[in-house]
Length: 267
Image (cartoon, rainbow, N blue to C red; front, side, top):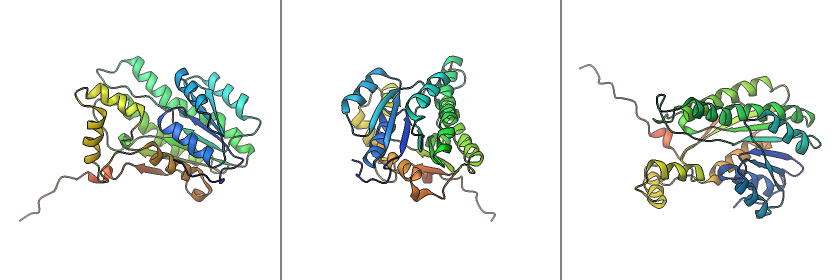
């Protein structure tokens, strides 16, 4: 559970993909710290679930990050009066397939949601952050931007592009006192992950997959949404005031398991 403090009191936080998984945990964590949180999502059932949860400080809003009209309307209607202090770009989808298996429609959808959606949200949040004297953007990439897995060409490309977007935004808007960072979560138990397990390993239960994958992690478990949300809250906080353009890996140490081929010495 998020710890209750007031270090974000009076701040406005927008979380795309904020009605499920990591995004919903971020919304709760920021709200517990006093923020007004706009938890944005597209799925009607998830939006209704967020509203029924009635978490103090959280407002659930419909948002289609693929549409600039939808993004513009959200920021102008719900955030313009107060400005925006924090944007968390968490909206994302995954489609499986290599370059031959992936349709152009799937490719376009993944890039539009995962990359263009983050760009559009930043494009409309930044002017409102300027009115507040600065702000923070945290993009949610994936460890697959570092450790590429097969059969995910669109997803891996999109998550790698978010690192470049982060670097560009952090440089372009440093003078505006807007910090931009990116997190790279590893295996985290979210609806996206369990849906993927069901698709890729129908022979295994969620409990079995959790045990198998966790055992291969140096820390002996898979991640939780709270593990990632805690890092995102930190990067958005004043404690990270001198951090921008950074990549924070949150994978329980998996990236360190890579071993380069050993080059034998000359006799």
